[in-house]
Image (cartoon, rainbow, N blue to C red; front, side, top):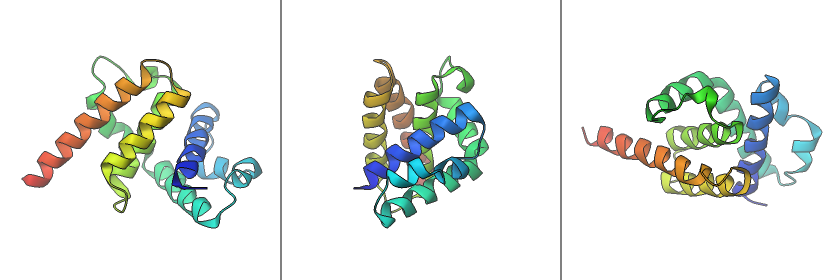
Length: 139
């Protein structure tokens, strides 16, 4: 397994959490998700992501909202919303993972689980965020 598998599991957790209203950590603790990640390192990474996103959802949404040109976060497809939250959390809080890797992983999830417009939309949003973060770090 790999971190890609952990991200995919967390995406599924976020998707379910968004629909059911359960906390991501609670969803991740379900046997189905635990069995999908047989390696301890992957489970640890998934738990770290799920817990962090669960704690930071409101802040992540506030970060994302200005970049959703002509869209409201709640009107986005659930899959796109989950992918964006996962990617922005990883970009902002998981420093050992380069931002470009987080974006590429998000695009792979979008291609697999989103519709035809998901990957280009997500790429545009995340690229804009990354550009602004780089500009802020120069100041």
